Length: 277
Image (cartoon, rainbow, N blue to C red; front, side, top):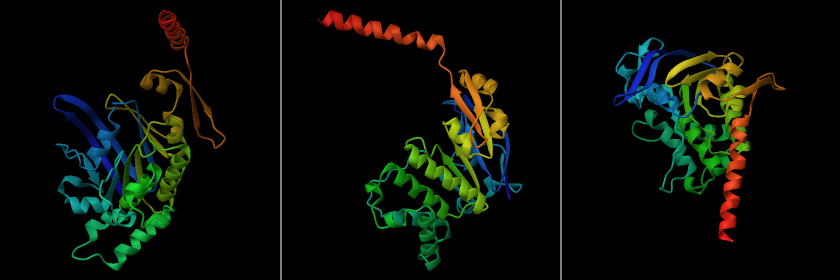
């Protein structure tokens, strides 16, 4: 099974956001989408998942136009994890994950539905939280629950929008290790938007780099994360070396122009202190 994107373009009102995106994603890989703020990462995920509707026949799963699928059919193929998910209702963790079984539930919740929820909680190592209220959990725990809910849909393609942006390094690594393991062992594909280039480099099989809504580079981390590409897309100079695990490691460089700002701010602060005294 493969996901194909053909010349995808999208506008908000008259403002073009995505332009002629072409991509193919096969099962078993982790594809990260990177680029500066406003480059179209979240919009691309929402277009793929049909949260945002495109006019052309641009999103195909095994050559089938996803616009012709019902939402129920699409949710069996794609799971989506947004940047943040909040709930003011006191649902238990088990109930939140069970919501992912909605496409499969006809009249009553079946034994198999409960089994799959239990399997997903165990896979993410959060079985001990099953009867806790979702609102009582930490940010990292909530993120794992939302991922478990998406996995309970048993999708072939899992889409995640910056799933580690608000997490500490421990939870970032746990989430990304789990996603990598999922792609390798469950015969699924993971498509994830990320800001941290080093984490994307470490856990991705391929990377898609966007600039102003267009594909600037696509390929392995080694092919995409070059000093030339980083400067052209992010507007900064950086060195790219090879980490101990053989992946590109990016170190941004602080230029003299940036350094000169700090003494100026410091002197202004001192002048304000003198005036106060």
